[in-house]
Length: 581
Image (cartoon, rainbow, N blue to C red; front, top):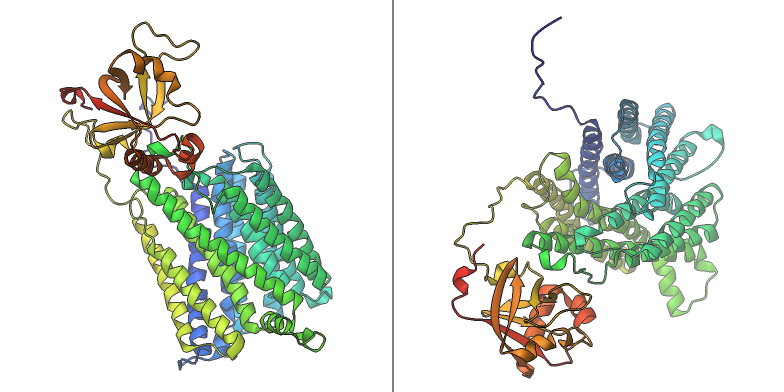
């Protein structure tokens, strides 16, 4: 028996769940760059720019974007987030299956790209079968975790499961398309298939992650619209798949309407177009919190606007297909809708508004919040940039404008070619930003005894002061102090009465003497007070309150400031010297 002391290894064990996610996400990013590069050159050729390329070289573009980028990226996010949502530590069997899923999907994607140049039914069948098996593994693992009653946000569990189901159905469609012996004719790039891939699989997981990540926006969510989101989403996925197997305009139209309804419920749940800053967050927010909140709004609001535009256009394409030109009346409105619905440029706008405008924007939104942790760094405390969002949406807007003009003119303007380079630049800037996030050194807050507490910047993060009762006055059934919100400006504390209160709770204190005592950050102070009804003062103080606590909180707690009353506290002289941190 050895008497040598046991030496623990300083090498950290491999984090296989993180490695699996990074493999999927990095591979998806490579496919995205390749597919976007092809799309950029193809768009330039369509816009009349003379380049030494043949149109036959762009067949891999949709395969790279849908099966390469979107599937692998979304699956990578799910492989790392779903176990974390449920507080699960993946075991060896789970990890081995996940690695196998990655190998099968990546091999399948590579074969699909090759067969787009060199068609081979054998290779297409092999790629489809490989893709189906890889997706089956992912769907089984994700479904099993989705309904575990852990981690809160129960409304997101069905959305996670629906994403797994939609992925499996998409893989089945790919197999049906590439095995003629099955005698089921399907088109993997039809409107119904695009619905299933982009809206069924991708958006279900996106909605789940968005709802669970509302804290990035310093907000909360509404549970009832969240439930309606997964109900509409599930019905849309089922209807969409049936319309692929049994083509029907009415089923496809119902599916599109249900996907649109699901997107509306998702926004209502997220309070995306409203401003919600609960009290528990707002006063303690730092500049970093504000930057993250603004970044999320800048990414997610345009993302859903692109999604709504895409769904409305797709519904028009279903109602007014090109075959309907001989059966519809010639009224001006009908002619316009027919022209829009039957245009190939509207189809182009529909696909790219979902793939780039919606899915691309959400990737740009959430990757900076999630990837740094996978890379062993802190979150977006430093290095967060708005430019990838701006460039992505600028590129998408130029493409949309070019498609709109092409609907009428039947050609794409040459300036539309700018769209591709802008989107590529956005992707490269985004990758550079991900590399830099959390790397900069954060200066620690000074905590010396020389820093005064009475600093306007510091007191923005403090929500309350606590008014103390004067001697002989007791609060019945309450704490021994009364907490009130304040703003500090120009060496004075300003307080507003909450609705219907008018400082009634502290009226005995105000009536006993010309001063009052209050507690701030654990220290006691004495101040003189003035009750001001000056209109200008009330207006200025109301604005200061809105800036500190948010418009909604001001309206909820203080009404519209109609009481016209402000309590102004000014510290008794010489107390400043005692106010140190």
